[in-house]
Length: 319
Image 1 (tube, helix red, strand yellow):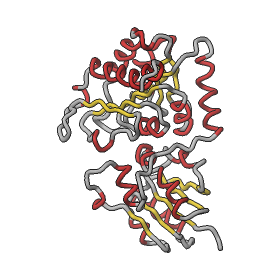
Image 2 (cartoon, helix red, strand yellow):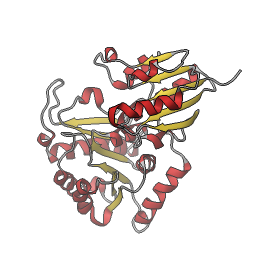
Image 3 (tube, helix red, strand yellow):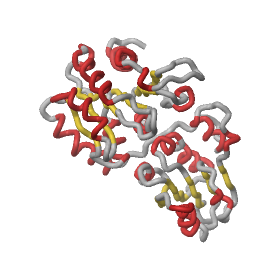
Image 4 (cartoon, helix red, strand yellow):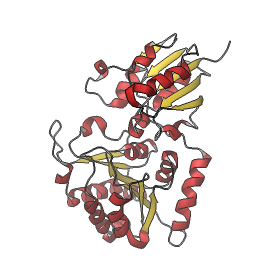
């Protein structure tokens, strides 16, 4: 009997791909030995190259008149799929041969966290925790950038991601600079290094924080693809970032993670995991305020709380 064939159509966004990454392991549980094809956007595609069971990643570059769906259909219609999982809820899933279809639709949006929603969609027994599938290539890429910058003054790393590409999600760049200045002067962070992480084109919003970090800064902005960035974040002791794909990457890596939120639903889209926290411009559930209402003092205190919960407490022998 041949191995089961599974098509997993997931997002063009990094964060959504990370949130739904637990589907990969669940496929293996439901169909042992499955050969998985993943279809996703170009930025998140490297996240799946080392994922267990994945034999192919098809990149969906958006085209006019839904041409990207036509191109994908042509690549997959000739296969008899044992299962098609479509997180994007596209019509494509009904136009290709499949024994079983698991297709997202808005009826699944019942006010639960997206990780839980995807888990229910898959019929999983419990929550499908997000997971990173790091490979040696990504770790080498991260080391090639980070190690030379740490050689003169090694120390624990606080990773910072001051970038979010959706309007309203980015805390002002100058406040990131002010935050780093406060943290540099804080005794808890004596000897720490401040690593800025982001993609190509993210240098302007990262510049104030990197300048404030000075000789204690580590620049990982635009230095590699998303899996290399994930490997860089995996080396950090703490992570602080806007509501973005990198925030979800940090949480999936198990790093203590603080997510900054403005006018978005932090109770639904906050980082997932036991070592995660959020700080919002309006912390009343169901109410919103611009992210500019989030003060440096508020974020600074939240970073100290993250440190004390996951760095100081274990060192002091606290539970």
